[in-house]
Image 1 (cartoon, rainbow, N blue to C red):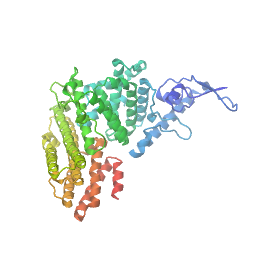
Image 2 (cartoon, rainbow, N blue to C red):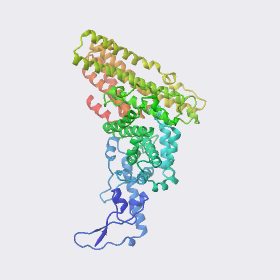
Image 3 (tube, one colour):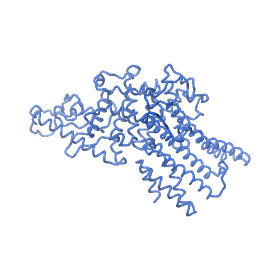
Image 4 (cartoon, one colour):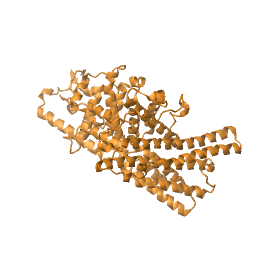
Length: 578
């Protein structure tokens, strides 16, 4: 005797099948439900179950409604969970109830072996399930979500990560138009065909951006963003795997951008730095292999591609300097690994603009101003990292060579000059970043848009600067190099200097609209974490009661801000304070 097992679609996707015809999972996913595999039943003979044809259509429809209700109930439960508890759902499926309801396709894990059509269909099903939770489910589509993510990116995230061309990105989003989806069944990703990878690149790029945006945006701007981040990230990574060999052999700007966004989305969503750094390092190695530090290597027939390669390199270079300064991972884009000098220009007159200049919001030279602030941030990271790296290099040389005092004094003077350069960089802050609130425009909406862009950028630059100042001070204290900063050897003077820098840092946090810092994700949290850890040490060691009370007050403000960012770092620091 034979009995039906899971249908072909459920068996291939490794999801639970209720063995109806069509099964509930296929009805929800809008897939063809076919039973082609029969297995011989083992064990004692049992009575034959009624054939599927005996099941009334009304019973099947009622079962489908029950299954849909299960999805919505479980997804609603997910929405109510804090971020720390949501993370357990990201790497696997949300299981059904004890009665054996099917796996929720919203968070089912994508596995190796899926086709591009499978991935696209899975993403559509997952996003549609999330949209069913909202009041606007009837009018909101995945294309609406993607376009919203693009809008939010260019307003809140482009100022600090200007690595996307608005026209190209919006054109890529057209693959989510309903009329385009049915044509995907014939797509075959071939390893050596640029034409056949263009769809996959558009899909991977767009979903990577959506994953990046949904990983940090507040619910007020992007409802159910926690439920959307994982499907977008999983589908982006799965699609990249289909053409990864070709992408590594023939890399372009999308190869870098996709990995940068996937890395950010992974770290923001899960807090997993190691996995995020691995993805980010792939982008850095590609930039190194493409010799993007060389101006001639960036020149391209496509002006848009030249601009994207240029901006991708400077973002990767800035992130590499941040890693060196914060000692969070190994440096990949160190100048010592360049075959030639760093000759890449910050801007090139012939490069194509990245923003849509027809929009009112970008009038008034917005993109040029954003580029100026972005490159200033890169200079701040590079200069601060240089001071920290030279302090560590001097220590290594002292241990190896046992330098005499005169030689050490000469090296200290060089480090001191590097620190003066770093400290004065902040005086280059342009007027629109010094006071974003004074931005004026005849179009009120455009003025608000531009103010937001500049607040996001200013908060990033200023908190980076104050954080680096504090780290440099700590390094000088730990390694007996106070001459670099012109400080005495009195511990009270060190403590007071730390308190002054931390207060400047807190003032910047309190000055900027909260969302403008929140959208910086785990990178922004990491800066606060460094400041808070130094405060924790100070509150335990400072002997002056008045100063200790001041430090405690500052620490409480830092912890309160971290709690609002919904980061697990706040929990760890709170325990350390108790």
